[in-house]
Amino acid sequence: MKLASRISYRSGLSLDTKSRFAIFGIGNYPDPIETRHNVGIRIVQSFARKKGLTFERLKAQNGFVAESQEREDCDHLVIVHQDRLFDNHGTNLSGSLVRTVMRDYEIDKKNIIIYHETLLSPLGRYRIRKFGKQHKQKSVISITKAIKSDNFYCFQFGVSKPGLKLEDQERYLSSPFDVEETGIAHEQVEKAASSIEEQLYKLKFSHLREKAMKRKKHGGNGVVEPPAFLF
Image (cartoon, rainbow, N blue to C red; front, side, top):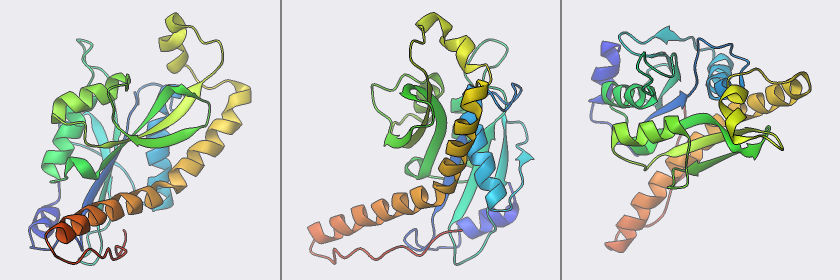
């Protein structure tokens, strides 16, 4: 991590005026990027391209990182996508990656969003929601264990199709989209990438609203000012 990042993070700026966010694309990068399992990586890569940012390998870690420019009047965004999904022993590496990035970049768990595929929704349908007990995605479970919290948001991108059998799911996820699915998948991935800044804006606004409610509860000002944003 750049030394300048460390200095600016500790400059005394209020989190109301400047925050740090991280978005994570989950997948298995050695596999072809067109596989269903890698839609989370595709989404954050597309967003980085739209912002003119390039990825660099994280030293001694299982991923790649791109950062928004350091400015005193802006929030700071760290964009991460995974490299290998499992180690040689079959352990899911998503949790250790997220934990390390949160520690090294001093990012609070409430300021992260995880982008991943889901078999709970049809192709191209996506939603953002907080982690819940019903969440069965193995990488997200790995993350909750590593950071000892489920207080974060997941962006779930549907890749399912009717009639998919349980025993076929692993092979299905690690294979590319079918010819008739490719166009839909690409279009929806680009839409998802274009919505990231709005998602982060809403996330920051919700944090400010929480603080305003606490102030009001103690007799203070409960007005929420729209946050100056973003990168």
